[in-house]
Every structure is written in C-alpha cells, then in structure tokens.
Length: 447
Image (cartoon, rainbow, N blue to C red):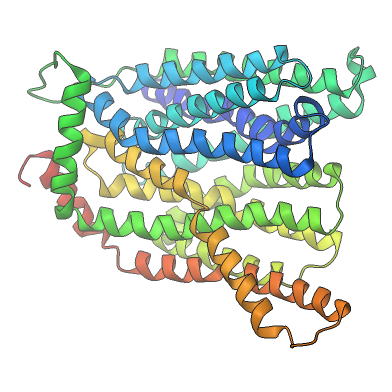
C-alpha cells in the first residue's frame, strides 16, 4: 500500500476498533448487566437513576471539554497524541470492568463514565484527522467507509459476545455473568489492538507554515478558543449547519432511544432488543457504504436531505407500531440511514471549517453531538402531557384513561418529527460555496 492508502486505512480501522465499545458496552451489555449484577437487589427505578446519572455526568464532561481540547490539540499539532491518550484511557477503563464485583454499582458507574470520556474524547481528534487523510469528493466515501467498518467490526464482536452469553458452555465459561465480564475484556483487547494500526499508519499532523510551538499549550489553546468564538460570527455557514445538525441529530438519537423504550413497553425481552441491535449493526455496514456511493452520484446535500426524510417517515411509522415484527422493521429502517446520516454530516462539515483549526471545530461538532437527545425527550414529555390533558374527559373511566395514555404516547413520538422538519429547513439555507470561501479566509487570517 502507498503511504496515503495506509493513512486512510489507519483512520478507518479506528472506527472498526472503537465501535466495539459503543455496541457491546454502551448499547448492549452494560445497561442490562448493571441492573442484574452490579446494582443487584436495588429498586429498578433507583438503578435506572444511577445509570442515567453516570451517563449524564460523563456526557456533560465531554461536551464541555470538547472545544477546549480541540483548541489545545490544534495549538500543539497533537491531534494524534490526544487520540491515543483518550483511546487507551477508554481501553483501560473497559478492561477494569471485569474486576468489579457484584453489588459495586458505584465503581461500575465510575469506570463506565471514564470509559465514555475516553471513547468520546478520542472521537474529537479522530474526526479532526479526516481532512488530513481524505481530499475532495473522496472525503464523503472515506467518512462513510469509516462508519461502515465500525458497524461491521462492532457487529462481529457483538455477535461473538452474544453467543458467549447465550451459550457460555461453548466457550468454557461458567455462566452468562462470567461471559459478560469476559466480553468487556474482549472489547478492551479489540479496541486497543486495532488502534495500533491507527498509531502506525497515520502520520503526525504537519505544522502549518509559520507555526511556532507554544510554551503553554493550555493557555495557547484557551486563547485560540476565545479568538475563534469572537471570529465565528464570520463563519455563518458553520453556525447555520451546526444548528441544523443539532436539530436533526437530536431527532435521530431520540428515535433510537425511543425504539428501545417502545420495545420494552410492548413486553419484548432483552434478547429481542439484542437482536434489534444486531440488525442495526449488520444493515448499517453496507448501508453506510451505499450512502457514501450515492453521495458521489447525487451530491451530499441531496442524500442528507433524503436521510432526514427517511427518519421523518420512521418517526411517523413508530406512532403506529404495535407488534414485535414492526419493531424489527423499525430497526431495519434505522440501520439503513443511521450510519449514512452520521458519516455524511461529518464529511460535509469538513467542507465548511478552517482546516488549520479542524480539531477545535470538530470539538464544537462533537459537543453538539453530546448535547443531542436533550430537546427531543423534553418535547416528547410536553406533547404527551398536553395530549393527555386535552383528550381526557372530566369523568373518564380507568379503561378510557389507559387508552388515552397509549394515544398520548403516540402523540409524544410524533412530536419528534418537528426536529427533523426544523433541521431540514435550516440545512436548506446552508451555502456550501460560501462556507468554503469563508473557511479559506479564516485560515489565511483575513477574518
């Protein structure tokens, strides 16, 4: 392989590596194992609150530190070094979950939260390396390839881990609890091993012309961040895109979470949910590649609009879902568009930002990603309460109240469509050519 091909595959393989954490740990086993093992004996609502608190704290820390870390990495030309640090922080925390004894929910939450910080922190610098390994129209395909390989790699290891928990005797394990703990070790091994290719094949960021190393990266990074916040008003297309992205990605994350909640409310078992996650993973692999190819044929903007439209239809379909098979159809639809809209949003954003400040601007991008699914759940809560109040007659019977409750929940899900509509409208007004020219002027110090 040429050096350029190595750098591309080094970048892509990090998605293959870290998706094991996102799939097996974050989405799959940790929430279930936390309730059944580490928080054993606790009230189900208390354990849910404990888990939610840990997730929220970790996400908030990452969201607040993302732009600052990006600015510091830009100043020190240290994007790759920061990626390595946060990636192996996540690897170490994930492996440590194996050692947490039953009932030690505080330690489990602490290690999980630190793992999320490592995973999310590394992604800031992983995303910021994209403009350095891809050029022109290839950037969309390479971004899609990254997500696609992430779905495949994460899905393959997740499938192995699922088999371990269902048939532990096949693997010489005592029971499913031991299998889950071993799964955490396998995720750490997978993540840490494949990250070696990223380290070996991606060259360090080259300093821009006239670059001078700063004596204090922290003070220089903070100074750059303040300066960027002052100048960002000249990058109106970046601001407009970030607002659009925040809206529709909030809708994406809310729908994903509501599909699982809906499945639980319909009485689906944990195995049903795991099957749905596997469906999303393995459909997401070819679908993300397909979206990248479609973007080359029809243009990135049209494909992002198409993905938003499909999510709008998914939202409306979810309001009618009543059976298990429909839940799987929903998982298939999400798998078709989830990777595509994420990959193309990431690559489209790279067209609008100053490349010399890529890590910092991807810090803002990831910050909004971490704040996603804040508006949607609140909107759903308000819509559900409003519908219940409007639809409930003064002297309703218990049967009527139950029926109205189900109908109100459907109103709540339907309300998420507002986020996709607003996101599409804002995205319509993003002018890519103006964004490119503004970014170039920013890099040259004209603004």
